Length: 228
Picture 1: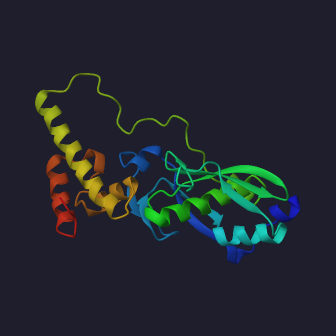
Picture 2: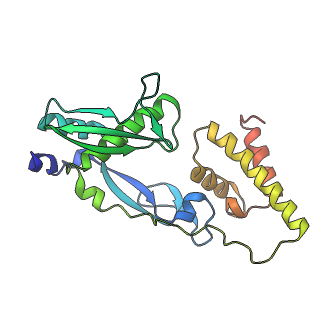
């Protein structure tokens, strides 16, 4: 059974996705890398990324059915209403193949509602199936995220002047309003930061933008269907 689970997938089953490798870029506050078009994947994103192969939920399911037609999965915990319980936005499951049960976890960053739950289930199944050796070689090529990534901006060593503190407060408030609007449109924090940099005439990083730039971008969003 192990050999069948670990067998390589055909080329048609393998897809490619982009993975950002810089923690600061993921938060939208990196000054070491720039946002640029990628000739390999065709996306516009930080230069600190790699391209990884992966296998979709449907092909993983087909592999499990080929090995054990009676395989099952269940959420690790349920809500009082009988629905899968989430922990910090992630779904933990038990996957049983050939009488052996192992855990898996999945999330759905950037998705909401029913679509998010479907993405979580698929992600959790792929993660749990990896514990049995399914597409393990692809998982081994994924970059590790540092356990304690450095903050995007180092803490100030001196107390800023009052005007500077006020300006930072205004900027933070504007960023919060921008994130609220873009979140409602299904954009993640990193996608919002990339969108802002692409929109900015100077290529300004989202976390380094001035209140004036942020206010202008907020007006841009509101004129294109946003809500105050």
